[in-house]
Image 1 (tube, rainbow, N blue to C red):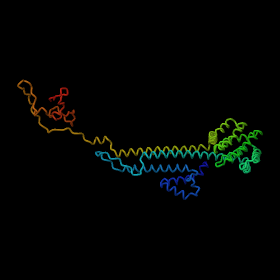
Image 2 (cartoon, rainbow, N blue to C red; image 1 turned 90 degrees about the vertical axis):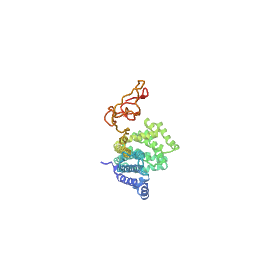
Image 3 (cartoon, helix red, strand yellow; image 1 turned 45 degrees about the horizontal axis):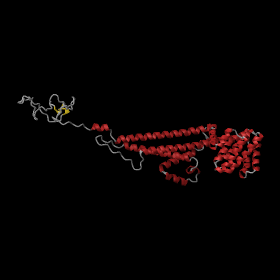
Length: 428
């Protein structure tokens, strides 16, 4: 069976989802126009900070993020249609993004910011819906007890109103007597105590209402101790923490002192055990602990809300990660399209050719002549000793061993023509 809390807001969520789509596409001017036209329509109160305002902001941010993702995909398709650059040409300069188009880094930062904002909105909405779900469960439980006891709560309210307005002894006495006369069972006592809790902790309740009804509770506590009315005392012990802490935290310091005097009296008279007194002495912590206990007590209605919101948060994180991965991949593809690989450029450039000379026929060997002094004589510069066609010479392009270029004979030869030790030419 569907949770009634969620079923009653399905229509409103559809309205919010549609409006978020239109505002994301058409800009904030469309939102302003809608606010002008629908300012009297209660269904659009979320535009003015009402219920589900946080959900609207979350949905709008999500639609904007999806729109940015679509724009990025369009940019990728445009980049893929551009012709590839020729390998022999110098690398093409990066194509500048159109004016006004956000960069990849800006898109990622915007997505991260949107994710943080959406998480904050979802967490706030989760707390609101958990509180509403618990309040609804408490109200349903009280309604069930009311049907069982047939207690007239309108009569009780009629007695409470003079206490709120004047807080006279007679008014307090009349309210106290009615409570004791109707404390017929634990269910009766819990219903009366719960009604006082709801009146005091209601949003918008003023300080005098809270203080005067706490005065009534103080008088009832006193007579519970005298008359040993344990059921009524136990019922008040269950609600005193939210009553006292909410009233204390909602006012300024001078008004807090009036409430604190009652705590001193309760501690002195021993109306409550030590654990309750400690919660009352630290109102913020006490109220937080009370709310945590309610979440545990009504786990059957709280858990579906928490699971649903946790799933939404996880989906948002997954969408953000996919969005970032898509942008990163697109950026890498665009860089590959614009800058050819370095190895292709090296392969396309031919290696430098070694200088060559005109082919010549092998000359006859020239004997070394003897000088008059009997020593061997070096050949003249025109000698045919500096020849490249000998059997020991290899062409660099051939498969044999590579020969070094000789700076003395100006040809390619297999052996160096300079003796590096004696710094003199070496004959071939």
